[in-house]
Length: 200
Image 1 (cartoon, rainbow, N blue to C red):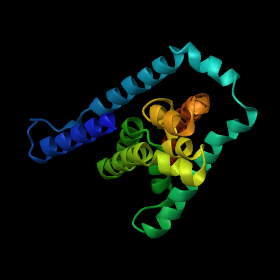
Image 2 (image 1 turned 120 degrees about the vertical axis):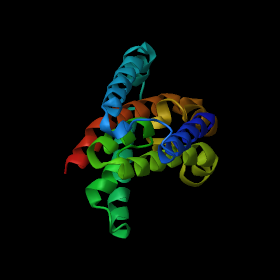
Image 3 (image 1 turned 90 degrees about the horizontal axis):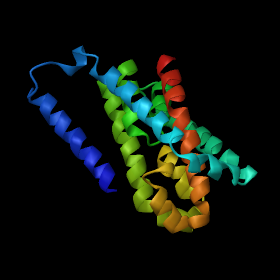
Image 4 (image 1 turned 90 degrees about the vertical axis):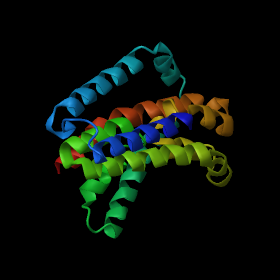
């Protein structure tokens, strides 16, 4: 929760700096976001490759639970496509690109900004931060109403890091491996799906 609030704080700070033109050059005219994206991708790969426990956790996973991240991905994209029926000023691929962030706000918002502009990138940032905060706050209710797998699906790509503690506390320690596996697969899908829907 604290990490999400820090991210929101930096977003608000950046918006104010841009609004009042406190930086003497226009960041949109530079390649800073591209290099930031490259650094983020490197850090994601480094984090995954540097944790041998992740591979060991995969081996002990119940084979049926392999389909949980697939269902999270399909359910999120279906919901985003339905949202485009209400948000008539946005196309279905744009809404699905935002949904394909799966809570991974830092990466998906940069991709979407690069492809579709700052407005949709900002929407993606806020949408994915809200998804993470919702999971952090509502995990106990999700377990009570929908079962132990519900907060894992709700957390999307965040279930291998920021929402993992609340998921293990509410769903049980035995779901930690499922949560890490789910987060890894969904996390891995983000750059491919976001760029795919942005390019349509």
